[in-house]
Length: 166
Image (cartoon, rainbow, N blue to C red; front, side, top):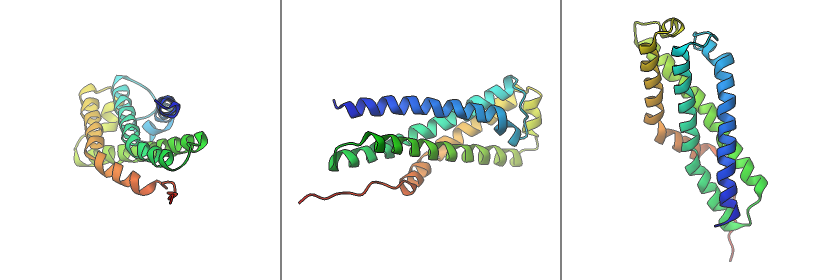
């Protein structure tokens, strides 16, 4: 087993958890306010935040397939430059996180528009059943959009140039 594979695993986990930590901070400080819920954390908003973090984590995991392809391309054509590998991991994580935030927002707002219930107010009032339903909608939106996300990621990422050997 190559040391790059172990490094890839360690970097992916370490950077992925770091991104999730910062997403948690963003959710706690800003995102719940953007959704209209407010910054006070109760059980209902914690359930929603868990679903949001799960969805970001899912998108990060979906980004690993295109990232593995980049690693294979880099590895096949030239010795691995660790800085390039770290750069690609950071790029994939950043794009995954941003797209995850966007999908979360769209999912929440779409569901909110389709129902007669004010989800933000209900979650503020610690309505656990509503929080569970909204969390499920967000999680399922991520699973439904998985293939589209990977396709988008494949088209957004600047794959390294191939060097052909004669």
